[in-house]
Image 1 (cartoon, rainbow, N blue to C red):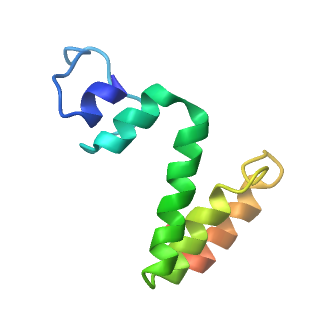
Image 2 (image 1 turned 135 degrees about the horizontal axis):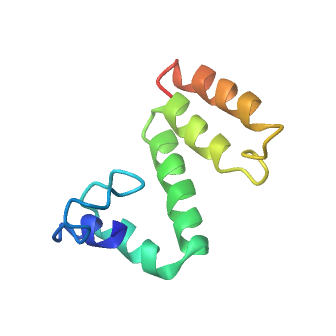
Image 3 (image 1 turned 60 degrees about the vertical axis):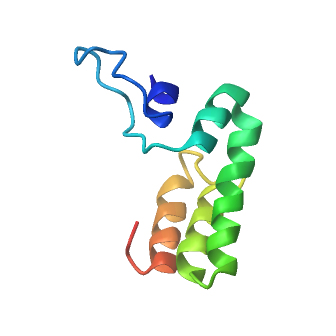
Length: 92
């Protein structure tokens, strides 16, 4: 369902099944949906690095921080989210 949405395809749930996440039309997300977790992780970190390089330091640092190994463990998740919000200026 997510891949179909990323490619701009039809609603394969026929309105009866809602997608877990809203997906924008994006061919790279469709490719990583098929390729698996490794390429998806690399693309997510790359997007954070790209934002950082383009000068959006807070947003880029927040995205990279959220993708660090172990950052979303149940006992670290709140701290990670608070730190990411601080980096991004409250936008997360």
